[in-house]
Image 1 (cartoon, helix red, strand yellow):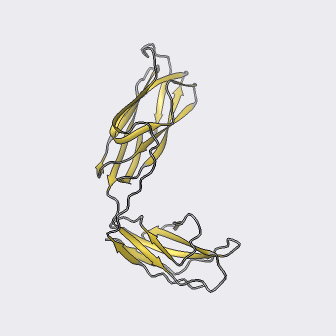
Image 2: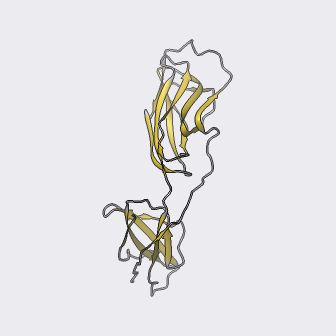
Image 3: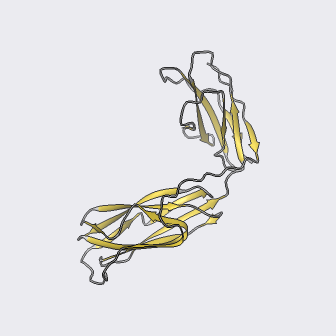
Length: 227
């Protein structure tokens, strides 16, 4: 089978991925708590937060990234009564207060980063509890990047065999493994990749898929460099 890829760059194609907000509160600061008594009567246990630093890397403005953390009780049952966080674009979800974490066990929570502007966005989150080391803290790091205004348009020769469509694969740079871009079979012989970043080089290949969902070998490779 021959698949010849002909890459071309489409410039000035603005795109913005707007995903549903996963969290209840978003902004520079947030607090989640329950009606509670003072946690000054600490137990003999400690509360561990992992990871100690939650790094979201670079996320396009208008998109979001969610990561899971864990609260672990060490030495005794720990009652976690509230959480407070700060940092532009961070929010907390997946946990309701108060919550008791049994000794030796963990309770998950989710932090979502939705950058509202380009640039670094440091933050942190603290959990108040009846542990001896309360409050327990976690550092949040991430950065917002402007959405790419470039895209890569691909086209190729159709297979001469009986096929139902094609899969498109991409890798960044000249090494590493390919990742499939299309979520369902691409039934035409063209595809536009809008999720590209300036300064990167991408390699593309395609495969043909028959009615039994058997894929062909990779086509010849096409390379696109994004200015």
